[in-house]
Image (cartoon, rainbow, N blue to C red; front, side, top):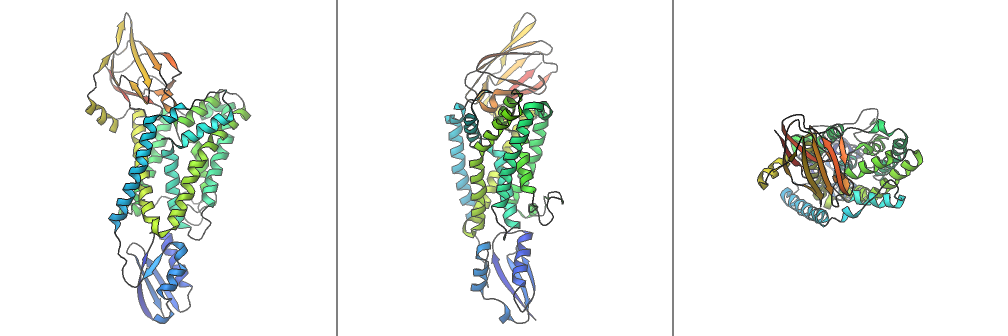
Length: 440
């Protein structure tokens, strides 16, 4: 018996090591194969070195799986690949920021009487907005894990199932909203906690995509009854993940779900939500199939993995920060507010009431730093000058219960601050820069 060490270049995962060991072990004369992708080495025990396939034959055999072999260590410039990923992320971020500044998406308006095509185009707007942060991040994470664990499977299957599950849940659960919608109406606090949990998982998956060694040791697995073979390879798991995105909080989705509640009809609300979900499909499909294609190509796989990892981490941090705003916790937004040094505006006291005057325009509420009196009823005059999306649903944990909806023009609400302290007013997704409210 002779022991030979070869060097391999490609994606790193436990299932990948098993795949290499199985494929090499099929060759006659090879007794044992041990792959160590963390060190880019493969140890082969054979009766004779002549029984080991040539480097050219191995590279041809593993070409479609994204692996290349050599008799000497591969030269890898990890920092160069990371720089390319940062450049791509910078470009994507610039497009995203430009889109938010121009306010193209704010032109989309819908109501309970809008046509189904209107809900479809509203879904397209949602797919191009910050709402893609959570669902798109989940999809990128899923694409990475599935591709690593299913090298020889039809890579389109999980994503077709993911989007099928998403469309099915929006149609069925959307219809149920029209009849018994109150059952599914979660509080802002509940959706915030749910989003934080999902975002923490996203954050870990994003770190794993950057090939951070300690993160690779943490295994995130689905229930065994869903994944009988390998992680994310369960027959119904992608379908279930897609179906659960109905409960992922997004300003656009929440607005459509709220409109569905008012229909009182299963068929009408079902078609509204299905049309909306179909509108989100093109962007999600692009993320799905482009990620599979790029992961299968060794030339681009590492750069794309780093790019996806950075984006997933970015999305996760945005989501966690936003939900901290919803819950009224200290967040990165507080740091930005402290640096801006905006003047605090006091409410106007009129007899036994205090008047709070605010405005919503662009993607912010002004003034963004106000002062109220404890125990004195507030008449809140809130003028909406073009705010749309999640900005039309306002929350203020600790100041008032639930949420309030901003219609175009003047909106008048009333509440009474019960406790002293510092509170936040923001949209239901926490994306709108929060207004700091001092109650004394």
